[in-house]
Length: 490
Image (cartoon, rainbow, N blue to C red; front, side, top):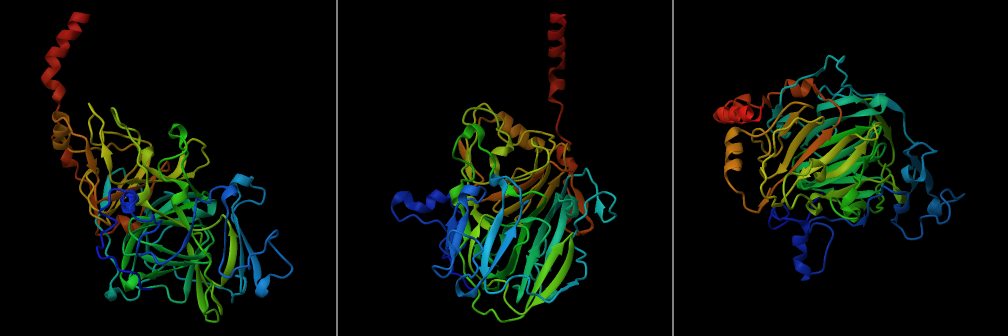
């Protein structure tokens, strides 16, 4: 695929917020980036009240029923049911597709060789995973080049860390992907769970059963469980990015609580595809399935993207992170990092999410009488962090776009003494921070184990603990004064 080239490749990296593109109302407003070639439907399909509908040919979608005796043009009706049949209306997830041939028309399955760089079982009994309290980091993983042969999105998957097991529908996995070629006559289905894909280098042209999605660095895309999709490279440029995979749950918008009706990621800014059926349908295709962490293949003599019309709410979607509405303290102190939450996924504990996607993007920092850097802390969450573009100084050591940083639950972290002293001694001005940068965090209540691939990678390095050696005991200079005060009070 070829896209419209931006005159400034960093056009959207340099903006403070999407609102900047609207020129204070001086031009007609627009919802997608100028180089995005596709049309979309707006809204977050997280409610039974906001189901989507689309038809590539007007008048195709049946009205008043889902399964007519005869569908227009001789199409087949096929339903994807993603939740229990008796799930409450607000939680029910499904989609009806009207297609040239149903997905059942295939030639059987065969087992594919294991990908040694992927993992699905993160229980410590698995000898291929490792437990470590050490603060770990990885330099940017190499983007596949021609010397590696043809590496597409599926063959370029590599697992870093996770928790649980998909056969239990309980847990999650974090991956990186690199690719130097498009998926040709091949589609991928993840039968284990939902995939949240975060491009870091290069744009993805994603063909789905529901229509196409164009996703570039600074945007995210969610592909739900059981949906077929194909990833093509844009202008044949190699790509790299991050993936959060969740099992037994689904991504939702976080509740806003006292924030009220608006803020954080607004539902209207999420975009889903419109129907666009494959006009070259009579060709052989390979469908790769991931189930229980294993890979299987089936072949068929027709396109998996032959859907002419559809409706439902089990639908892929994308979101532009520059539209995130940051909130924070405008008086003193820090608000918890939950204010940076874009998407969340519930766990079986009603008070603890399975996973959150947090982003740290351009915003104002104005709290007064407050120590501005991240305070020293220990918390229950496992944190795996990456940098999409720009620079980010909130880690224990610097990291570059494409890097990974990991801290497990209850391990202390914070900045070096020099930064502590500078922030403590100086009165900070109101300032804009993280300009030209978007960092993200996959945060989970679950303890992570690290895969063999990541643990043995030459990209692995530890956060240097010597950076905290000069955290001096300032209290010692005041101990005599403190003892005198204690004596007076006794």
